[in-house]
Length: 471
Ligand SMILES: Cc1cc2nc3c(=O)[nH]c(=O)nc-3n(C[C@H](O)[C@H](O)[C@H](O)COP(=O)(O)OP(=O)(O)OC[C@H]3O[C@@H](n4cnc5c(N)ncnc54)[C@H](O)[C@@H]3O)c2cc1C
Image 1: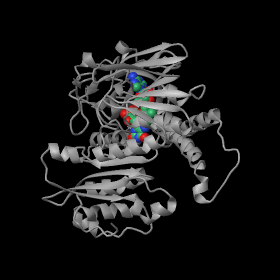
Image 2: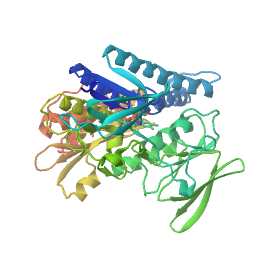
Image 3: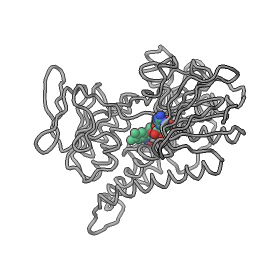
Image 4: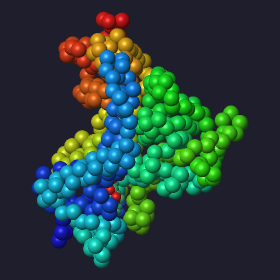
């Protein structure tokens, strides 16, 4: 007899949310975690970075007090206190997950899990062998096993790009450094690279971001990339796009980053370098090869219900492929838990928004204009700038715009792209619209409260059909 209905391995936003849902549905559930409850997201990712960014944002806003008719003497910051606040926020979130596991009667097993072939028969799910943190080991059988083991920062040792805890940082080192660096080269201009660059620049560091492709934030719409680069440059960040990093070396007082662009070689110097070149799934060392689990470039291959090709074995979140986002992990976790509990759900498939919490913020969902072009889709595009939105003008937050993309044939909203203050809060309006298959007629008919920045969302939808009002 299996001891549990479900054992979840990894307690990030995928695993702990899946465990809660499974428990709500009456499944006897255990969760195994080798480090901190809450995973990367709560301890080293989404949440502590937002705490840092909030400190940076508040500090930067103090230099604009005059614009609001205000003044203050001796504005400054205590770097250690900023870092400690961020670590405190992570600790609070970790405690919250501990409480939730207790509340939902989920057994938490502290240790590192590996998998072994399970018994043949009704369930047949792999067995979980746990090297316990407290010492010793425990073998657990469950009717279903869910891998939610997440990912870690990608290293490229061939070019010396490997965190050393001193001069070369990945996100963990960048989140809790011993002292504020004076200059930084950030490698990679995705959300993580841009967020760290933005935070350290707000506190006054010299920041240069190196990007391999010809524009920053390459997953975003081209217009957003351009506006973002201009806005970040206005704040003093420097960018080197279309540059290949050939070598990262330590020496002298810092780090040297050798780059190559258009056949020309150059070396950038800084006190530290932050590597933000992507992630590697934590799928090694678990025993997946011996079980014959199908993989794709290090990620576990799953079907529309998060099932692997091995009976009773599920995978969700970062370890099961892109997009590498917390809300995608949670969504898959809930879906898989419900499927295991016997729900006859359609395949997991929902629009997933991407957000970058720099200044200005960037948020998007669905297809980009270039994506539509490449897919040869006929589209109608609308735009609306915040500089003519009353709330944005009143708040002194006029940077950026909203862009909407509609399918020309059906009128369905298929993409939305925003850059500006608070757009990471606003994007959910468009996520809901896309999930509910809203058309331009639906969105045009909605009344947006005034004055809000979200009125720009209405105007951008009107603009796609030549009905814009305030331009
Ligand atoms: C700096 C940074 C900022 C980010 N910001 C955002 C953001 O703003 N928004 C967003 O959506 N996403 C963000 N992300 C991405 C987000 O953190 C991940 O997408 C999310 O954490 C993935 O959740 P997960 O449950 O799949 O895995 P994880 O959160 O990685 O959790 C996996 C857990 O499994 C444990 N584990 C691994 N192997 C084993 C084993 N064998 N036995 C036991 N336990 C094991 C690990 O210790 C870990 O706790 C950010 C990431 C970083 C690094």
